[in-house]
Image (cartoon, rainbow, N blue to C red; front, side, top):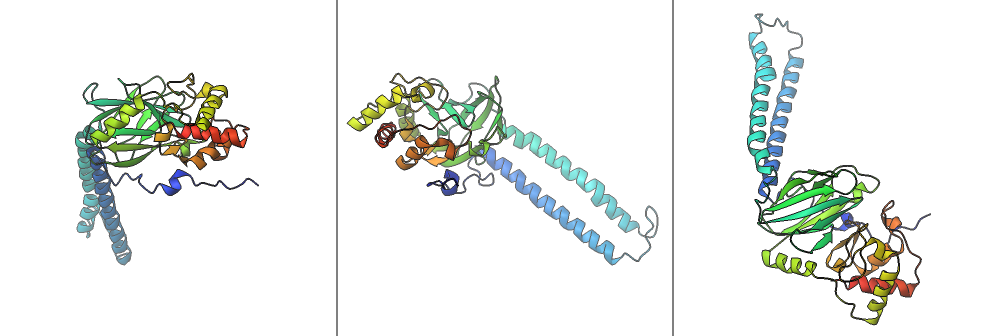
Length: 326
């Protein structure tokens, strides 16, 4: 029998913050208001139907002659509530959603926002680039709060769907095509997102965070992400760097400032600044990083990350090096 993982998946400890009804942007607020209006309207409609069914049961032994018979009031109620009222309500909802909600959530025009971020979906992780800078990260998007950000989304393999419920609607990421989505958080926070289009075995573990930072915090973060990797500070970390560059790691991952130039897996230049591993599958702490290096298929079966047969000293050196990439 396989051993039980020592660490819970991130979703088990990160809290329930993936909620479309707790909006953190103007766009998601319009969506949530529409949802509540439709819920209340449907509940009232359901209640009316239940009442009419009950009245019909109470009056079940009476003769009923529709359209000019003795029960003209009943006929008027059935036609009014069953035909005219639904037509009016559905028409109003259509006009509201089409002229207001869709208009509010539509993609921004090109070059109409102060900044943009490029998101590329992979099986099963997110690559994030900041056009105009050398900053590259994975699975955790940082944006300045109260700033309109144009998300440019595409895919490197199959169709994915980018969805951060607290910020906006979904946007499909399609190979060979760029779809746009506005990200505009109105308060600082950490907002969980998810791939909303089934994309394979680890679709459920293809999540991301959007961090809405105060502008000064965001500028510092972006400046750090654009720099090459720090040089290892200890003999153990230097040994870890040597191992990383000589093992197959460097063929799959990039660490800017070194000879590692792989593009199959995430860029690890500033791995230690991230809060999670493997698209929110594990927290990014040294013990979890150790488990991930030893046996990634145990935590994310089907991923492209292979396991390695390392001695304990080699494993500890690699972890020391990667944990220093801040």
